Image (tube, rainbow, N blue to C red):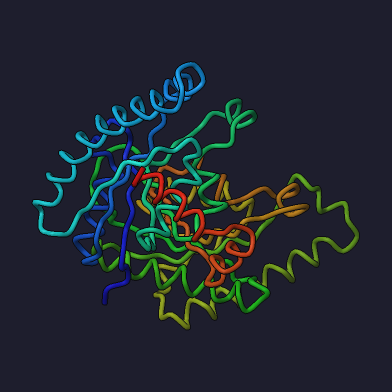
Length: 325
C-alpha cells in the first residue's frame, strides 16, 4: 500500500544531508513516493539593493543568491537520486518561510512535510514565534519534525490519541493517527505502542472543590473504558497499551524518555481563544521538549477549513510566477 503520493523535505540553505533529509529519503524509498527537496532562502541584501539601486539590481542579487543555493541543492539531490527513487529539488525565495512552504505544498501536492525540529529557548519564544509552530498552525498537510542526532531508523513508535474526542471529526482524527502510525511502523519495521493521556492539572487544587475527587474518579473510569475500547477495536496488544494521567505534554515527554520512543504520532488541531489561553498547545509543547521525531497528523477537514481563510491556490500561483521571473 502506497500511503503517500508526494513528500516534501525542507533543506537548510547549506544543503546538507540533515536528519530530516535522511528520514525523508528513507520514507520515500519505503513508500515509493516522489521526494521533493526544497530550500527556502532570503538575503536582505536584495531588499537593500531594491531600495538603493532599483529593481534590476535587486533581481541580479536575488538571481545570484538563488543560483548559489541551487548548485548546492542539486549536488545533494544527485546523491539521493542515485539510491533508486525519484528526487526533485527547488530553491524558493522566501521572505515569509511559512507562507512559502504552504505554497510549495500545494504546488507539488505534498502529503507530508519533513523538517529538522528546532528547540527554541523560552526567552526567544516570548518574542519570536518558532517556524515549527507556524507550520503546525497553517500547513495544509501532515508535518514531521525530525530530531537532531544519530540518523538511525525509528525502532519504536507511539501513537498518542485523545479517547475523549467528543465529535465525529475528532474521532476521525484518532483513526488517522493510528492508521498513520501503523503505516510508518510498517515502513520502518518498528514496534507500535498506543498512548492516551487523561488530562489532570494538580496545580488547580481540585481537592478544594466540593465533589472534585468523586468527579476525578468518575472521569478516570470513563477514560479507562474508552481507551480499552479504542485499543481493542484496533487489536492493540495489552503490553502495548499505555494510559497516562497528568499534564499531557509533561507525561508524554516522560514516557518518551523512559521507554526510548523514537517517534510520536499525534494530532495537530490549531487552538484559539480560551482553549489556548488556559491549556496552550500540547503539540507545540512536545515539539519543544521531546527527544524523538514528532509526526503531526491533520484532521480530515483541516485543509478545507484552511482554504476558507487562505486562498492556497492563489498563493501557489504567486510563488510559481516568482520562480519563473
